[in-house]
Every structure is written in C-alpha cells, then in structure tokens.
Image (cartoon, rainbow, N blue to C red):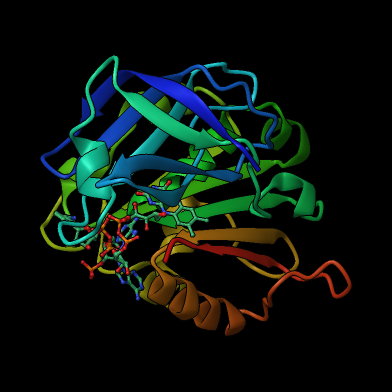
Length: 244
Ligand SMILES: Cc1cc2nc3c(=O)[nH]c(=O)nc-3n(C[C@H](O)[C@H](O)[C@H](O)COP(=O)(O)OP(=O)(O)OC[C@H]3O[C@@H](n4cnc5c(N)ncnc54)[C@H](O)[C@@H]3O)c2cc1C
Ligand SMILES: NC(=O)c1ccc[n+]([C@@H]2O[C@H](COP(=O)([O-])OP(=O)(O)OC[C@H]3O[C@@H](n4cnc5c(N)ncnc54)[C@H](OP(=O)(O)O)[C@@H]3O)[C@@H](O)[C@H]2O)c1
C-alpha cells in the first residue's frame, strides 16, 4: 500500500457536525460500496481512518461523508479542511459491502444509520442495482430531520420506478419519517409497510451499514423473519459492514 495525495475541492457542511469532502487527484480502482483509508499528518504522525466512497467508481472526484466525533483524533480535523488542503488517500480500496457479493433476488434493501448511508449512495449511482433487482429500498435512520442528508440524490433516484426510500428520525418528530429505530420497525412490520414491498427470506437481501449495535439488533429482527447472514459457502440474506 502507498499513499496518494489528494486536494480538497469542496467541504460541504450539512450541519455543524456533518460534512462531505470532495477530493481531486488520486485515481483509484474500486467497487461501489467499498472504503479506503484517508489520513492527515497530525503532530508528525499520519492518522488514518476508513471512509466509504460516496461517489461511484466512474466519477473521478472522490467523495466522503463524515460526522464529527468530538473526542476523535481525525474526524474534527477532516471537518475543518478547506478547498486546496491536502488529504492523503491510501492506494488500496477494500471491502465486501458490494453487489458482487449479493445473490440475485427480487428486492435489495440498503439499510443505514448515520454516515452508514455513504456506501449505498455509491451503489445507487451505478447501473447494477437497477439491472439486477425489481425493487431497491434505501432506509436511512438519523437522530434529527436535518441529518437526512443527500435529499437531492434521493429526489433524483425517486424518478426510478424500482426505488423506494424510507427514513427514520429518532430524536424529534419529523413529518414523512418513521419514529424510533429500524430493528423495532422490522419486527413489527412498520418498515415493510412504509416501503410497500415484502421483506422476507423468499424475496429480499438486506445490506446493513453503520452503528454496530444497529447491525446486531437488525440482524436479530431479520432472524425473526427467517433471514440469516450471507456467506459465500452458505448463502443467506444479510450482508453487514460496521463503521466502528
Ligand atoms: C469500513 C469502515 C468504513 C467507514 N466509513 C465511514 C464513512 O464513510 N464516514 C464516516 O464518518 N465514518 C466512517 N467510518 C468510521 C471512520 O473510520 C472513523 O472511525 C470516524 O471518522 C471517526 O474517526 P475519529 O478518528 O475522529 O474517531 P475514532 O477514534 O475512529 O472513533 C471514536 C468513536 O467514535 C464513534 N464513531 C466512529 N465513527 C463513527 C461514525 N461514522 N458515526 C458515528 N459514530 C462514530 C465510535 O463510538 C468510535 O468508537 C468507517 C469505518 C470503517 C471500519
Ligand atoms: N448526530 C448528532 O447530532 C451529533 C452531533 C455531534 C456529534 N455527534 C457524534 O457522532 C456520533 C453519533 O453519530 P450519529 O448520530 O450519526 O450516529 P448514531 O448514534 O449511530 O445514530 C444514528 C441513528 O442510529 C440510531 N441507532 C443507534 N443505535 C441503534 C440501534 N442499536 N439500533 C437501531 N438504531 C440505532 C439512532 O437512534 P437513537 O437516537 O435512538 O440512538 C439514530 O437514529 C457520536 O459520537 C456523537 O458524539 C453526533
């Protein structure tokens, strides 16, 4: 692995703690859904963290979506980057949250908390989901309505008949979004009802990304519907990626 030098072209702030970096320079070979380590030199040390690509592979400008973890070493500094600043990008993207690992089925569910929406935006901006699945459901949970980011992309995607979008807002009432958390809504049927398509082992594959406790709780809820983790040697219905 080597480090490539990127230049920030834009740092968009959605809220005081949510930001999207657009980065020019590194030409990387990756699949939609993968991540790469990005780094800054802090007090003489290179501090690197994994970030999922938001951009699809055919877009030469890299995009990353992040949240400020106030006590974290890297994310507060990433949030302060300005156009023209340098960002180090590793040369070796990786990760298994990719459609190549997903068996054919009728409905693809892309289920995220917080910044976990990032890899799904990359996947949704490629042709593969629309060629392979009859229904594609994006589910995004955030604490507050203002954190339901990338609504411009959601609007563009909504022109596709296969696309459904369900949002959750957990810490305030927000018109158009479900209340509470994803796992409870899987268990009591609210998610399926809101999406208007069946969520079951016969028709669905679920990709989960974000908060590790959500991954655990959602897998338990999906287990109640007869769904299990997908493995190459033992095909199932759930693929996961934990962000911490
Ligand atoms: C495969 C993979 C892909 C990732 N992709 C992204 C991404 O696209 N966007 C992104 O913001 N982060 C992503 N992360 C997390 C990222 O690598 C960093 O951990 C995060 O930016 C915080 O860095 P830090 O150095 O400030 O704090 P760290 O020391 O890395 O983390 C401190 C604590 O912050 C919390 N935390 C970390 N990441 C998040 C998060 N994303 N949302 C909420 N709480 C968090 C956890 O409690 C963690 O223990 C990914 C992680 C992995 C393993
Ligand atoms: N989001 C902010 O306003 C904010 C602001 C500044 C800093 N930060 C930092 O960012 C981190 C949190 O970021 P975040 O809000 O994107 O992530 P998060 O804490 O993972 O919350 C995102 C969504 O996931 C839900 N969730 C949490 N645990 C779950 C579980 N077990 N099952 C199902 N859903 C679950 C949350 O619901 P609940 O609300 O019910 O937990 C929320 O709707 C913290 O380190 C915080 O310090 C966040």
